[in-house]
Image (cartoon, rainbow, N blue to C red):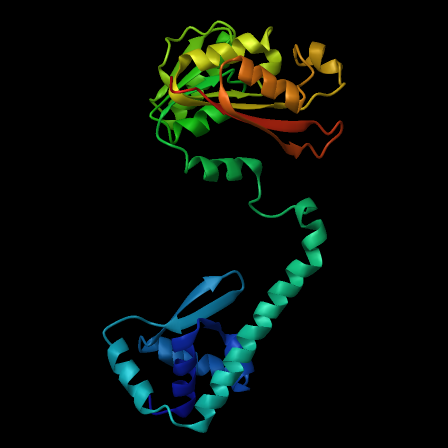
Length: 299
């Protein structure tokens, strides 16, 4: 503590977590000198470090000696070198902020087209679902079951309805492997749901409505099983002309226009209807996804 350089390092680390390179720049000293002082400070427990990739970040250690260190730093704060160090630190932090801003300004126009670590639709959906109420959900037309499993993470109960027994069996196996016991699987048709009235808080039809023989009837059934004030969420395709999906994917309808989907939901007795375009597939034929929500009236 009697060494001026070590005091300068400690005063800087009291303000910011810094790398050895940062300290070299601020103090205008060589690597070996900075490393020697940091090693001594770590040895006596005044400084700690953490590894992040190729860099080590140093900061003041929080321990019984911290109070004594604070008193010593306060009593030795008049040297002109300390003021110079603080200006150097401020310049360093300002430059780092400018570099970050410059990067985002540079890539702003193409940012959405880049492959970025951790940016996936599933990750985003899981994050948003954490805000969903702990309620009773019905997943009508489960498909691969991914959405059902995601809902189960936050739901009080999920009723999974699908026409295919094999789809439901696959879902049960995945649910068991993940330890979920709040999923009930039921074989049934979208336009004739084997569920009692007013037993569900949220009904979800994710890429399922275009499989229904009569979409209006499927939405009426979804409304029937909802409690008053319950909500319907429809995720489907904007109307398109890719007729091959009828035979290859068993689509009965080539998507829906916004106005048609809104009319169907109103005809089903739902209110507060909202239909919006959500996202376009990056691969041809660039299907557009629609998201529609509505509420069952209270009376």
